[in-house]
Image 1 (cartoon, helix red, strand yellow):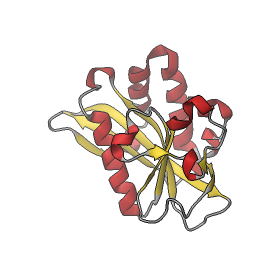
Image 2 (image 1 turned 45 degrees about the vertical axis):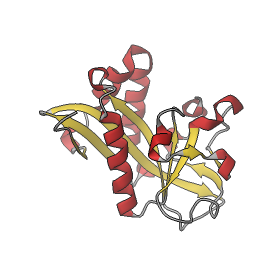
Image 3 (image 1 turned 60 degrees about the vertical axis):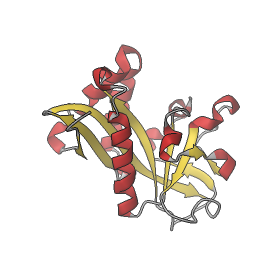
Image 4 (image 1 turned 90 degrees about the vertical axis):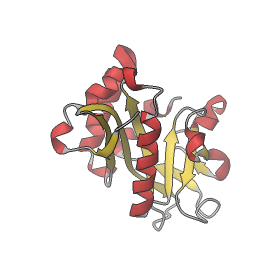
Length: 184
């Protein structure tokens, strides 16, 4: 999409952002994702977080959120984040908005010193950004992922030499630390 701007979400947009998730996911999943987003934005254990919006001509078309993650056994020197959730308004899907949000988010996280980014998402979408299955690299999700969905738990290294050096179970913000959020 031409002239799309990816930028940090502003405080006064907090009430509008859940609407993007509602519009993207519909009445089935939308309300749960909007509630999850609202809770994550208020969760002190999610900090530091990165919340970005995609805007075109003053209209918000998409949103992405990255929240703090840790790896246990304790690897205090490894800065990590989890990408969740990502949404693009249904009328803007398939036009590169989601990709632009992911790319800008990864660039900002890398610049801030984040070394690993995790996502539980569609295995056909995220590998184009360099995400790869995390479990086979010794990086386990907070809750077990069913074997048939193991490729949906992915990681992207933003720094050289991190993969292979760091292993363990990823922990996340309290809001995400519920088994229902880890079903794919």
